[in-house]
Image (cartoon, rainbow, N blue to C red):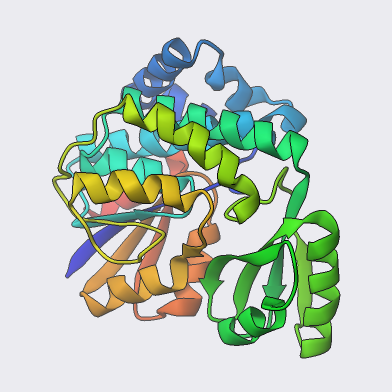
Length: 305
C-alpha cells in the first residue's frame, strides 16, 4: 500500500503556524532560518506573529505556506517517513516538487516568491476574485459559465465543490446564475486575485522567465501535477506545466482519484490546516488521510511508526 504526501496551498495559512515546530524540532528551525536568509525578509516572524492582513497578502502567503510545509516534510524525512508519490494543491505543487527531489529548497523558494510577486502585481492592476460553488457537479458548473465572459472554472476540488475565478463582477454574476442552477452555496474566497484564470496570463509570462533560471532535476518519486492529474518524472514536462498551472484549473478531484486507483491507501497532509483532508474524504473515502502540520500531530504520528 502506497503513501502519498499532499501539500496544501493558499487559504491554509494562519497566524502562529510553525511556531511550535520551530520551538521543538531542529529541522524546522533550520528550514525557517534558511528561508529568512534566502528571502531577505522574515517569513519566520510573519508566520508566527502576523499581522494577519500581511500574512494573507499573496506575496507573503505563498512563501509562508511553502516554508511551513517543507519544515514538516524535513521533520518527517528525518524520522524515516517517506512518500511513494507526492502532489500539491496549487501553490502546494512546489512543496511536492521539492519533496520529490525535482527542485532544491532554495530554487523552489525563489520560484514561489517569483510566482507570488508576479501574481500580486497582475492582481493589483487587473482586479479579480474567486468563489467556491457548493452542491453542483463539475459538468453543471462548466455548462453554466460557458457563455459568460471573464469567468472560468479554476479548481475542481471535489465532486460537489468547484471554484470559479475571474473579474469581480463576472464572478458575482456567475454566482447568481449558479444559484439558479441549484447551487447550495456560493462562497466568496478571501483571495486577492483571479488565480488559475486567463487574467493571470501576464503573471505566467513573467514567471516563465524566472523559471528559466532554475534547474529542475528528475524527481526520485512521481509527482502528480495539477494541470494533468497524471504522474510524471519528466523535468521538461514539469517545467512546462508549472507555467501552465498559473492560468489553468487545479484538477484535484482527478488527482485524488488517480491516487486511489494506483493503490495509495494512506495520505498525509503535510503543512498547515486540514483543507485537503476534507476534500480527500469526499473524493475517495477509502483513503486514510492524516493531517501533519503541528507538533502535536507529528508526535501522534511518530508514536504509530
